[in-house]
Image 1 (cartoon, one colour):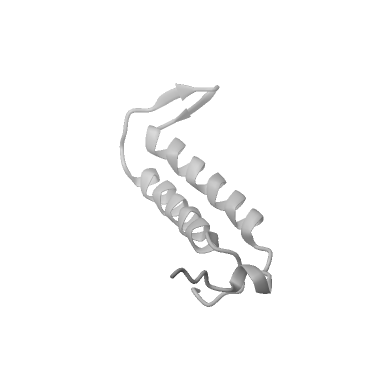
Image 2: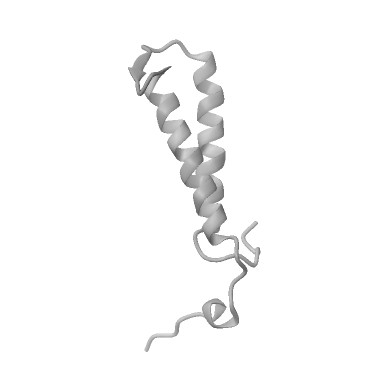
Length: 78
């Protein structure tokens, strides 16, 4: 996946999405104290997982445009 033509940060956004999904699946198995926030009943870890998924999706949406030739060029410092 590293050789994709998308912008820097895209792969990290994919990681956030997959980590959030994995965390949400695991939290369905665990028994934790439920929180009552914003009219929702969920655990703190489930809330964090949903935030990770949202950040991952937003990052993928913003960074999915292909790199331009100028942004793909490495920066050379002397």
